[in-house]
Image 1 (cartoon, helix red, strand yellow):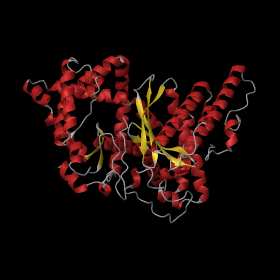
Image 2 (image 1 turned 90 degrees about the horizontal axis):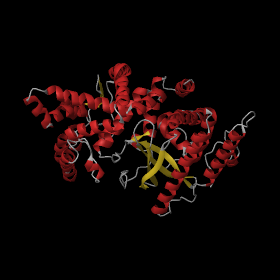
Image 3 (image 1 turned 90 degrees about the vertical axis):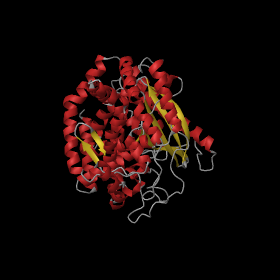
Image 4 (image 1 turned 45 degrees about the vertical axis):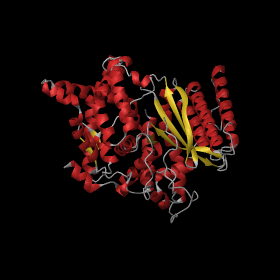
Length: 266
Length: 240
């Protein structure tokens, strides 16, 4: 169902734009999520921060990331990213053994930092459009492609089968909950800042979500420019015309080369 | 090199009162000394960004130029944050740095979007430019205060289209985790100026462009509505 929506909606301009046809409903859901976060999400994250010192929080995150790595591995392979798949596999073995069940990220310290892939990113790599932007209660900003991918990813995790076989699915739910709290803890300052200072928190959150998501899809690089889609192009609007030009501005000149960074940022 | 888009004259940078540093009546000697130090720092910073960053420069020199500009900007910002406790003066000093190191007119125009910009009158554009500077500086001054004790380091750099990117990292924060910031710079007025800051893969220019577009639409689709919204937000921030 979600996949069908992806296929029909597509991306605005076939590229980096985000379509928000349900903005009215999305705004209402967003308000609900913000209220919920004020009441529960942020206080829990703050308690988590003050209860557990940073080394313990890092350990918890490392274990959760390690448990997630089979999902990343499957998606690396599905995207044809074999070098990254090898890194994911090596990391899993190194961190599970030398890192004592994933508590320590030993692989990162020997020059093999981790990454995460999900099926939504795989769909993007296969050319499936993002689908419309939707704000999901409890979950937050998503696209239908992202949300549909999440459902598939559950099936990719070997641990979900192991836990189900032993009738201890609650462990999986607990790990998901801890992961959510941990992620929220890491965003306390960023969300506070955005909420306090933005002219339109909804629009700022939507834009932040989509930019971060595009970076994930393109593995940390800026997405390639798409002609006619200059919303993501800091040069596009201004090249070739003078400041102060009035109505009837000439259309911006397009460059033939793409705007990918020539060197990776990190 | 002179600051092309500084709101005052280039000399204003070296002039404490013009740089927003108020003459101190009942201030202590130490405070006065600090103020002089900041004014001197700003003056040096104004002279520091190496000029001649034309398109003919070899990429390597351009990248090195970009790095030294960002380094000098960070030093000036830390000097203001660490030595100046008064919020208003801090903001005034940061506004001077913003005008000096950032291509403010181009950023403002990008953020407003082509449609709104072409519909705006000359007076509305001027108002927007002025208000935008104040708003951005107030927002960042609030955020930056948390990073006073942090350590700034440059971790990557390279060519970026017709300009340069420099990636920095902030570590040693009291709360929150270390973060990366990519500075995208473009030649402007004989030097390189910052056109965008990308905070952990999220471009601030693009975020603001979308946010302003939404605010413009939701406030009647007029510049008057948008300008009023920015003023209201600024007053709200001022109360905090």
